[in-house]
Amino acid sequence: MKFSVLTLFPEMFDVLNSSIIGRAKENGLIEIETINIRDFSKNKHKKVDDTPYGGGAGMVMMPDVVYDAYKAVETENAKVIYLSPQGKTLTQKKVKALSKEKHIILLCRTL
Image 1 (cartoon, rainbow, N blue to C red):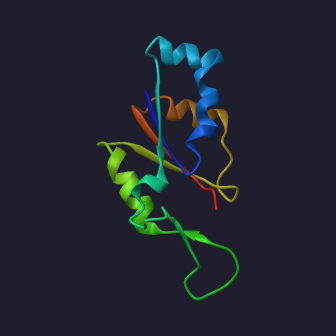
Image 2: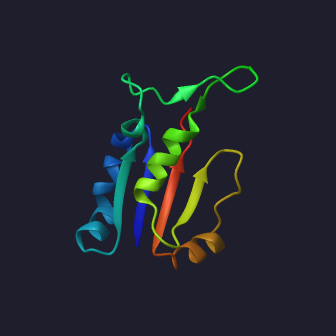
């Protein structure tokens, strides 16, 4: 099983190189790659955020940068999961269903 993690902070996932997950990686059971979304920015300052369309508080990620990062790791039949506090709860039933996938792309909400 392959996991592609799209994030602005790839160093946060270095912890996955140890313990049970680290051993699973060493034994070739899973593959985890982290993709820095900033690497796909066309801005010389690697800017990835912008103000919301129509105004308002906060920031949003530029869709073209996120899309380019996604296209760089996309494979046929990859399952894409957008991680957000407003999303559905991850349950054991969903984990069992996801365990049958060959490639999971995780898009981390960071702004």
